[in-house]
Image 1 (cartoon, helix red, strand yellow):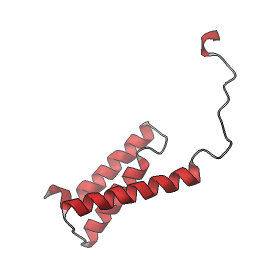
Image 2: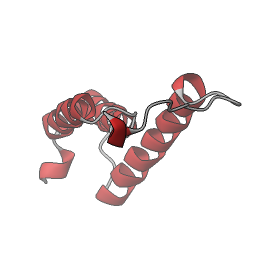
Image 3: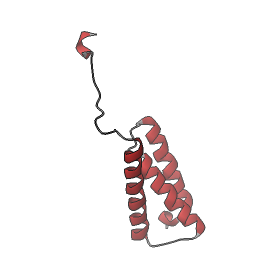
Length: 89
C-alpha cells in the first residue's frame, strides 16, 4: 500500500525535480509535476486504485510536458548555429 501514501509521491516529485536540475531540458519536470499532483490528491483524500493512480500520473505528466514544450520549448524557425569546430580549439 506504499503507492497510496502521499509523501511517497511527493518524495518522488522532489527526486525528479533534482534530476531535472542535473539534466535540464524539461525531461523530468513533467514527471515531477505529475507526481506532486498525485501526492496532493492522495493528501486531500482521493484514493483510487493503483491503475487509476498511474493513469492520473501519466495524464498529468503528459499534459504538463506538452504545456512546457509549447511555452518554453524551441520556437518555430529557431535553430542553433555552431560557428566553431571543436577540433580546431
